[in-house]
Amino acid sequence: MNLLLFSDLDRVGTDRIRLTDHRLQHLREVIDANEGDSLRVGEINGRMGEAELVKLAQDEAVLDVALVDDPPPKLPLTLVLALPRPKMLRRILRMVAELGVESLHLVNSYRVEKSYWQTPVLDPAVIEDYFLEGLSQSRDTVVPEIALRKRFKPFVEDELPHLLEGRRGLLAHPGNYPPCPRSAGRPTLLVIGPEGGFIPYEVEKLEAVGCETVSLGPRILRVENAVAALVSQLS
Image (cartoon, rainbow, N blue to C red; front, side):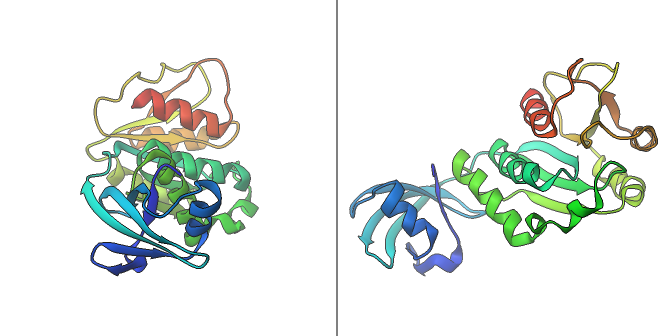
């Protein structure tokens, strides 16, 4: 935990917070904190700063906080991702927050199994927990925006053109396509398909609304590795 995140619900005063959940356990058992220690803290969707641990007991931790720093800027990147299998989705949610992606759209595809949409990982509270893990790791406070879209065609035809306004659209797809740019240089929308890529019909629909198809080279990566490689390359 490189940044201790808290929300307005934790406040017990203008500049004081009280923790009683897993963060208290982390302070006691992982960090081995002591009263008087200074910790790096951030308010969810707010500013960051330092906090003094003024009380550490079995049932609570009380900290005085001073928030003086803005969080790091988000990448000007919108990620459109075919819903991956739940185990991989957990890692990707953390990764998206950790890398500073601005917004994430999880979409359906022919190769996305219907059962994936029933996973408890898509519960809003669970998604937020994974996002917060990533933010805590990278010292950020701003939670990425997320949208779930279970119908591919209406999303591409009705929503994607608006999302592309003012953005360069890139579709990462296996095949003999131009290489992905080394740096976006402008706000970008990046589309990544499921394992094996989108089917030809889906590629055609994405290209028809303005997405440029690009490649990472001859190797076909796992989705989570493709996300990491492409986001890092574009940023």
